[in-house]
Image (cartoon, rainbow, N blue to C red):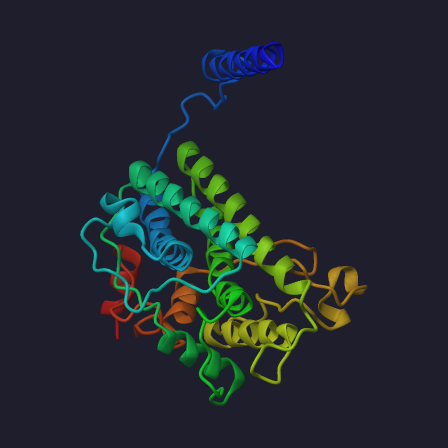
Length: 316
């Protein structure tokens, strides 16, 4: 037994040394360093407001995921990132099974990293007031179905309800990053946006796959399937944004499926299977729930923060 233990310890030591060597090589070797065009500018002044705008959605995701998985949020996990902003309204721990708990906890910590990367790269602003209450989600789902659900929808009720509520949020950030991309010029801000977009797209894919697997399941206690819920939410977002179809549920008619050959829609994409894109105005119309970027509400009772959101609030 002693020999086995010694052998195991030796193997682990070798693995640690190899890992350390690889990390040292990765970060110190010129062959692993990124190459940028000569005289390239790291961050353009015009990039800053556009990248900061994304912090509004990252704050929403961070506190929604952290509170739901852990029972506490950014104020406990990384309080300096809140920058003195008010705590969210109505956030609470969700009744999640083990698998969903692990997924959402990871998502929460990923959002902490996103906020840290954004604020250390382009600066930031205090967390806006967020409404993560049952009442706000219930109102949103009532709006999606066109009548009051009985009982009111509760995102914290169980794992399926929670993942349906999660379907509402990351995709909006994803299409926002796709929309921002053509307007970013600095190589540091481009790298930041690409890294954020990759993970946001991954989160949305996990959520959509989770729901697609349960597409025909009836959501208790409502007489609607999971697929119907996603279709209604996507239709509502299209309606609020007022810029055509840029959002699709997990089941679509053939004319919206990939190459018009499938009704499966695990990933939402356009005719060429490219991600849709949205402007800040479209995003605010959706997350405010008002269909008007000048009128706050929904997840942001007092509106978003940052120059873009605040200037839009000041306009009639």
